Image (cartoon, rainbow, N blue to C red; front, top):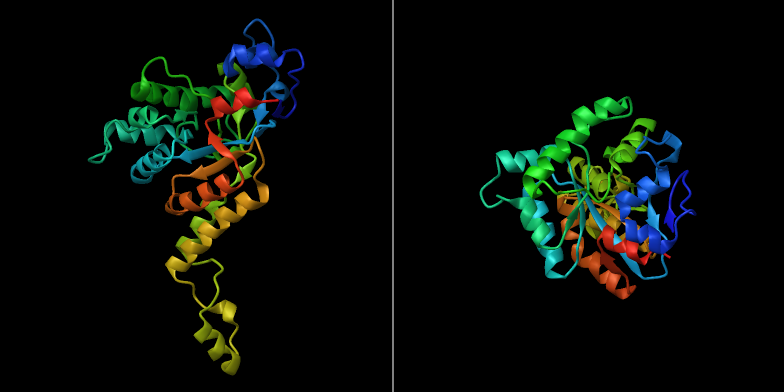
Length: 290
């Protein structure tokens, strides 16, 4: 049913699994009694196996209120629901010190049809964190601010640790809270190419005039400095190229709330339409598991 690591769900039928819901089904898979499962028993979802031409667009971090709201509105305009994984601190900043026009950002995104997972609180490197430290410093603060924003009944659809780092403690955390670990099967590369574009360290084609000049004087055309606009265009091309190479039915796609990812929306939506792929939320994608 799912592309998972180190877990079998053969004890549950598809109807039973979907009827339980993701969190409850995880508990049934991991065992009775409410005990924390062994680390190697946690369920990690990177892809949902399905014959339906459905994919899931996910966006991480959401540090930028400006781009987060623009993403939400643009996809809502196209009737596309996103699965968002905000950092807890980003949610807290919006609650405590929202910029003008960005008040109540998270309820507004929910009302647009988007859903939320948990990306922990600080976006630190958690490789050396134990279970209790994850609970006290990352999970509980995140749930607290998310419930301030979205109401006391809020429950994240999944847990995505920063950088996709999965340790024994992270797997125990997932089992303790009954929330599946949701990673991704396709990285849009938007964060990598954005960093390259900001530093000017990107590949771009030199203008024809420079090539002609270089043919006489000999400098390598690849040494030409790319403009910021060229780097941004290169970043958008890299995002679309990642789709073209790795997109499959049931793919969970990783994005971030960044300028290049926003500018790539028209191109990626055109590609999805051309391939007859419908983007839906993760909770909806589960219902198409085969």
